[in-house]
Image (cartoon, rainbow, N blue to C red):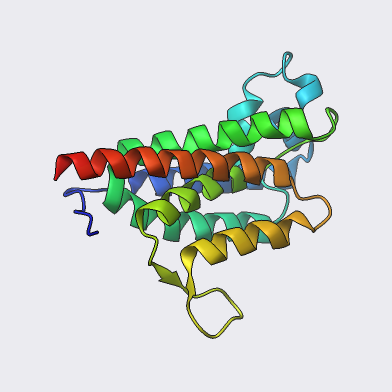
Length: 191
């Protein structure tokens, strides 16, 4: 099946998310307490409800930030062309929020979740459903892999690292797969 791209797409939302994430990262370098203020913690959610969104802009180190922002750029720029800016933003933020909800119920209530990974896994889930034959290169593997294998493989590998909020990744991926099915059905009805 072939999907028509939206005309007049803009990468501005991606650049805005990346800029805010960089600004928050720089703030955490200046004052590490920013992570505690913006990071999502189930035990502190009622006192700091904004953290269910602000943690998506908060990263713990340069590699964490770079990995998430590069993946956001590549997945996001491709996905905006397929589904438009509005659907991209809805998927991104709902994926991040559902990831936080999964984290709330499946992790220690005193753990702190930060990073955009749940939202990015949501984008990967949508792309997996909408473009099942898409092949991607994953460093350091020298041959292209099906996107679905890269997403599932990435999820499984990351889940074994200590300090990784696999619950957030899982919640984002679930949202992305469901959103992908919904968007695929809606796109088919347009043509």
